[in-house]
Image (tube, rainbow, N blue to C red; front, top):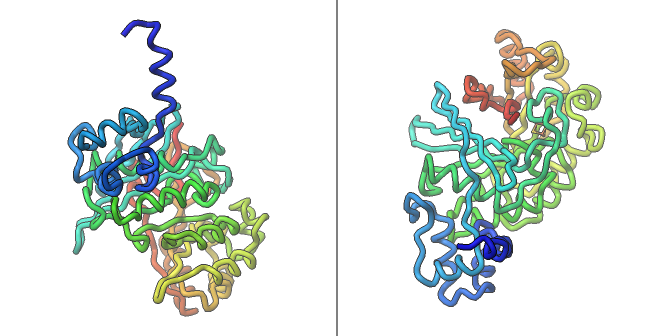
Length: 354
Ligand code: SF4
């Protein structure tokens, strides 16, 4: 191709739409003449791909050549951990980088959990979180959220959603980018595509109340995890600036309005920081705040970030046990969650790309 032809080609490729967040009706609107769900399935189901990507019919290839871009985020770094989790760094089209974590679990039924990012960096500024140090660089578009997952599944599997759990606990506050998240959920849950059940998708929020309300009105309502981390507004605000905007009482009221399925529990996350929020009084207040909310409380002893300086320390294991025992004495259902991938910096609150 001569150099004079290059600008036209660039313009043409710019005009093509990313394929990964096109619904079947979008594909129909782009002029696909056969059943658009079939092409959608070919694009979304990695089980049907070959090594270089989706395997398409002649008509599918023609539509892609005319209207769609198939470029996926590129995995540029893979850091395996001794516990089987792998931290992945993915480069986006504009060079921005995000992180995802692939976590297989072999016990009883083999399953894989993939932890996904929703933003490049994060604006929430939680003081215990390494990602917060980046600030918010930008939101991910819905095709980047879906493309991130497809890139991970294509490389590491599983190839079907039957063995897959998704958690939005990577970089970013998903509800601060709620429209792109909802669009991505529409694609991921569509029965003609990957068909991930919404009950196997968990969205984790720092307590973004308008985002919660918007997500609650969407078609595919996922499971919910909420970072609490402080049992009083004063402690919570010192750890999570979002607590100034939406205090604990307001957050609690929003959780009461969350549309739960029968027997569904809301997951409450509590990062335990030595000398900050790990005393018995905090446990009493936390139990009081949860009240009659159907929940499971994940207590997560803080991960020291290693090479990233942090003002916080991991609590001693006796303190963790005492804190948990105190919560249980109030009737709370508590699990202690040791984050996986600690040696690969893939654990909660440690995702940061330099
Ligand atoms: S904990 Fe979550 S919401 Fe808070 S700064 Fe980190 S990524 Fe953002």
